[in-house]
Image (tube, rainbow, N blue to C red; front, side, top):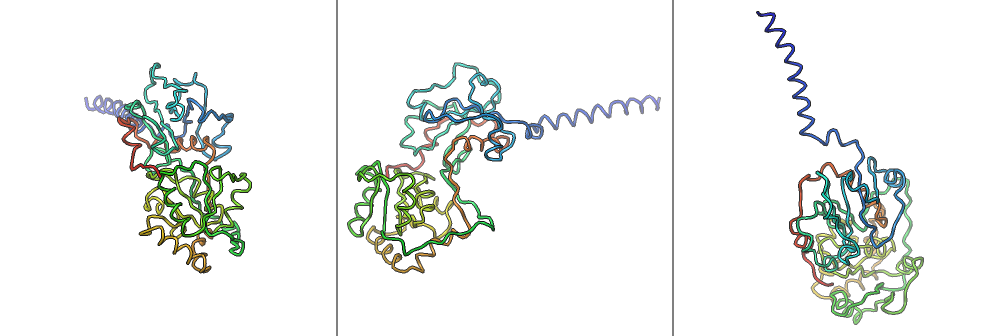
Length: 345
């Protein structure tokens, strides 16, 4: 009898162990799926600008593994994520495939790099999207216009020749609106100190090859955004000012947002001054004191600017974060999430 009981126990034990092990795998799906390809389907091209998705593009271009970008709608049923660019949806040039049954576990991502006041009516998208892709730091997938990366030891630092600077303040603007805050600040500032303005508004457009060389001859650049919105910091800071070699005077996102992404003492925020006159006086004093001015450029010793211009790179960023994102998240009110502090600038 004891032998029979022992044999039964030995037979049952492996089954119990197997069941326990398989159960642990089921409750932790990321453990078995982390090494498989994540398939991201782009439903329509942003601004109708297509690009090649052939081969292992995310790895070949950006060293992001296990990521497959596709644009064939026939792959809808097997896609892990489907990405929809907001501009085409709002302009009704594309439609959401709500007429197709959504595969279990598939996530739909809403993507936009526009400020909230340019996103249109988003109430129609309630309870549809599972993910957000924007410049916001609290988005599910944060896709900024730019960022700073640590410099490698072997990367040389180009010197800033302050002797070549001929203008105190410059600004490049095409879409000028008199009622915007940035226009009002410019008008006040220009009445006190000269502001050299380029762009379509003044019928002095700059070729892309001339943009940065022109800005490099300015002490300060007005990196003024067209909207006052959370985390809305565009290429006006990253490319025009930082890469152009001028100290940015910024207006757009709150001061705390700039401090979160930019090096200390590398920019001047309009909100730091009680008046535009007070700011103008500070800019004049700073330009005359070359040592103090140069302190605003010391960040370049340790950091370099990384621009994000290819939407494919932004899409590839989904894959490394896919398994860590909530599986059952739904934006019940996308409009409310998008419309954080937002006014015309």
